[in-house]
Each structure stands twice: as structure tokens, then as C-alpha cells.
Length: 360
Ligand code: SAH
Image (cartoon, rainbow, N blue to C red):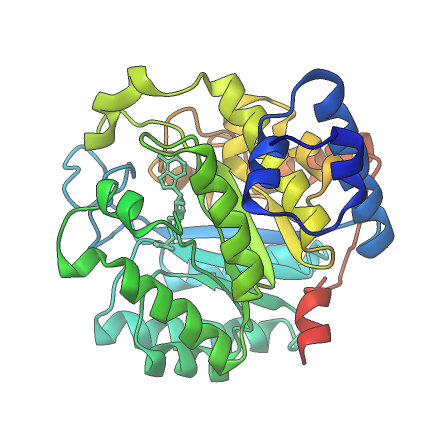
């Protein structure tokens, strides 16, 4: 039973069916949804947009996710691992350009050499920035001890997308082995939260086999888990991955894009004070995609500051934007873009999740 749309928008918590109704909004209803989410955003987190300089420092990965371009079985990828001094140079760039925070992201590795190297990098980044740079990390599933070690070394936020809250759907988009277990992923998220990280998760939107009910449940999952930050964006098929064979069953890229915006808007109305990142994948579909997301609910953006020569090798999906410009170009471009979205850049600020603060 659908309830009147205007009545629905007056509420600030929704049942699963109501979320499905919102997810299907189009035309004037979609516009009203976006107006509402924008209002909630401005009231609860303001118009500041915080930068997280993104360093995708390695595409070496032991996982084999069926959707991802850098999966271990993809032999067409040139594997790279950026040297520590280059990573530190990028961190210095972020600090000097008042970015406030960094995101270190890579494929997944769990060997001791990798773990120790990250610990050391975190300490070095804290040192070179006089403790001023905030650090988010995103290196997949690790043991609680490793998460703890990295937390002590200086990381205070962690991004680990659940990819889908539905274990059945999760199974369909991952190899069927214990190295790709939904239960482990959930446990990792719990560990991160227990240790005290600002904990971020997210999902892909428009996956093969995914339903509106799945997406509604994803939103309810984030609420239930009491997550501090979210990064979610459209699924974009990659021709060197197994899921590519389902490309004809997908909704159009444009529809995945609009649906992603509606997901962000609904989440903002429900979780008013969390940080929501404007995912890079939005820009792969619409050149102004990230700005559109900032306007209707997102408040975090991750300018890519990976040294340029390696960017073209971190292709999780096709059509990835900004793979041939340098970090300087990125900053100038970002400023213009954020002004366009009526936002203001929170230079030199961490822009921590207000939700995390109120949880503690
Ligand atoms: N290894 C880390 C981070 C790298 S992958 C981890 O597992 O968390 C970062 C995110 O990219 C993934 O969580 C996934 O949601 C997204 N991604 C991967 N392939 C994608 C695709 N084809 N389309 C859209 N997003 C994708």
C-alpha cells in the first residue's frame, strides 16, 4: 500500500516498503525527495564539503570479487605498488594544500610485510603533518589485531563496504569460498566499530540480481548498524570480470545514477548527521555526478591524488574519471565544482562524522 508521497516526506523514519516507494520516485516526486534531503543536509551537517585526498597506492589484491577490475584472476592488469616515498610525497601535497584528511586505499593483502609497512606509513604521515592530517584507510578485511595496530598508528576512520547486506546476493557476486564470506565482512565491520574507528560502509547500486527490496534493506542495515560514514555508488560493469556477462540484464547507466542519488537522499533523511561521500563512480556516468550528489545529501569528496602514472591501473570499473590529470589539476577543478554545488570547502579541517561524536 503506497501512502501519499507528501505525507511520506514528512516522516524521518521509514519502513522497508516506504523506502521502496521512495526509491521508485520519479519526476516531481523525485524532485521533492531531493529538496527534502537537501534541507536535512543543510540543517544537520551544513554546506561544508570535506576533502579526503585519495591515494590508491596498490592494485595488488588477493581477493577475486566477481565485479572488480583488479580481482586477482584478472591477468590483463598491470600490477603496481607505489613506493613509500611517493605515498609520503602525495600526503605532503594534501597537507600543503589544506586537504585536512587522506584516504589510503589498496587491494587486499594480509601478509606481515604489508601490515608493518602500513603501520609505518601511518606513523610517517602523522609525523610529516604534525598530526594534522586525518587518515581514513580502506584495505579490506584484516584481523582485529591488525585493525587495532593501525588505529594506534594513527588511522581513525575505516571504510569497508558491505557491498550488499543480503548474504544471498553477496554470494552471487563473490566466489563461493571462505575467502569471500559475508559473515567475515560483517565481523570486520563490528571489530572496527569496537576498536573505536569512525566506521564507514557502503554498497554498489544497480548490481545484477539486486532488487529494490535489497537496497531498502541496505539502508535499514546502515541505520541498524549505526554506521558513521557511507560511500555508495553505482555498479559499473568491467569487461574483464565474470559479472560482465550479465550486462544486458542491468538497468541503464543513467538509471543507476539516478537511483544512486535517491539512495543518498533517503539515507540522508534517515541518518541526518553521518558523513556521506560522493562516490567517484558517480562521475564515471555523469561528468557532474559528484556535484549533484553533494547538492542533495553528500558532504565528503575524495579528490584523487594518486601519482598520475599509476592511476590508469586502478580501474575497478570502466570509464573511471580523472585518470590522466595531476593532483594540482584536481584541486583547482574541485574548487570550481564545489562552488557550483553551492558548497564551501572545509579546508584544513578533519570534518569528522558528527554522528560518531554523538555516539561517544
Ligand atoms: N580492497 C578494499 C578497497 C578497494 S575496492 C576493500 O575491499 O574494501 C573499493 C570499492 O570499490 C569496493 O568496496 C566496491 O564497492 C567498489 N567497486 C569495485 N568494483 C566496482 C565496480 N565494478 N563498479 C562499482 N564499484 C566497484
